[in-house]
Length: 279
Length: 307
Image (cartoon, rainbow over the protein chains, first blue to last red):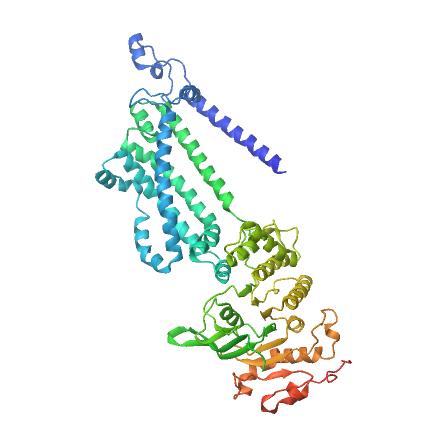
């Protein structure tokens, strides 16, 4: 029953994709020549003018270009012409660094805040004010103080991914079932051992959920941040190809951003499943 | 005088109420237990039974008074006093063996893995869970979960066991089996046990002494009822004992009517000197205010009961 449901859902997905690609192809295909013009003018104007081709690339153009990129993902022809693999690697490295720094800060801090009602109350106003700030608003301040665009981008990732993790850790730690804490208390388990053997496993699913939200936000923000700082990365690639008026490359970049984002989310989802316990 | 292994001395519990007033759940509560004794507390909800148990466990602190266990005033929780929780409180991310081992390694921190495992396994076998060591709590039935709770409590070889309605969430059949096991284990190991229950038959089967508490707030320990049934009583023929109904009726009467009226009827009740009720032994009954008629039951007085 389930397998047949999955099969049917898969078929519907494929049909939807085919329909989308078909409509896209029909909407952007070449029509008959629009007007007669001098060959030199026609050469200057390109297919758009001579054959009524849409300025928007069709699925076949994008597919061909994508195949080209897949064949040479890591070439480096100088600052403005690098393979997509290299650009994505830059972005993933920035997200990874900023995100790991945020994990190192948010989880221990979340533990402290969650376990101490005093700290929780004292830090709450700061968190409430800092949390809604758009991460990109930090960019000028980061550029001014750090004086390095690449590190500033990492800082922006750090600051945007810290809040969901921090708040989820605080919530997870503060709402560990009282009876589990009491078990540890009646067994005279010390604070540190209790934190690792009771609170951490009990709060882990909530913490991992926060980490999953954070990686999603970090991947959203890196594209915008790289458009601002420039130089390398998939965000810079999108903006650079817009300046080159290569819509094909922009579409390919959009597609890849989606795929990488999905992969990052799936990795975190797998970790979440590993620490989730049935009650 | 019996030795006082556990002595609760004048404890009170008060909570700050609305607009500055304080709510007193109970106050000036005195109670003692001998080593190896099985005691049950019976009373209606809200009389502070669980609070008394939590204070004994060290999970809660009394607003006044002290608790002395084995000659020492308690301060906080201790591995000497194991708690069996009503909701079993197993750690769901650990297996059966993991849950028991956690307790074992908490008590004997220097033990290596193999020694901890062997010790834990001994207690898993004792409660009849051999073969389920590697299951997680979610894969166990309610009765099996509570067995793990019992194994965990026993595995640290405590001086006493504290049980907060441990079987109330179980079906009647499972409850009966577990009562048998708890009784067997307590008799074999000579455990001192303090149990809260709402089930009169459970108290009669398990307890040597039954503490009757009046309704809260302002609850008092009204009577200590000594169980007249023989120590080798069995669950199946319990109700055939000539004193069974006398004992049962006495407790039910208390719960139905006297738990509400006790404090007004007995204004001079001395909480330090709670009357001990010995059913069926009129000569030994200590009844305050000459209420012997009510507090003394002799075999055969209950209609329809022939010994």
